[in-house]
Image 1: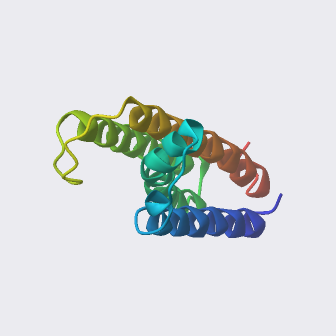
Image 2: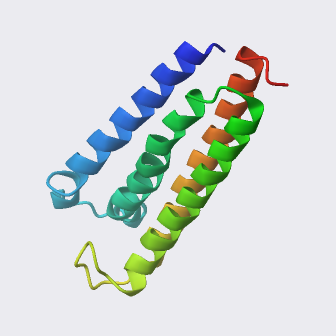
Length: 137
């Protein structure tokens, strides 16, 4: 895969998770759904989308790397950012500062971890693409 195509895919994922985030609260959560599986999915969708969206914003820096050393350095920084985002999303369930929601939801933590795992996996694949296309190793 070429770098240009990977940028398009990254942009597409960011757009999709942004749309999902913004239609969840005003629309999807207002639907009368009796199926508990879908209630869990819709209820935790903001955590899933946030845990994908924010790490992917920082992934763009990987494209700017001019050497393998710089790519490695940026990758470390993105990993730290991903860990911080994960800790913020999980701590938000215990000590709500940003959302104001005082309801603890175990599924929100699970979906946050799933989202960050997806972002981490995507970042790993992206690094492979960059290394191949820029002949870094």
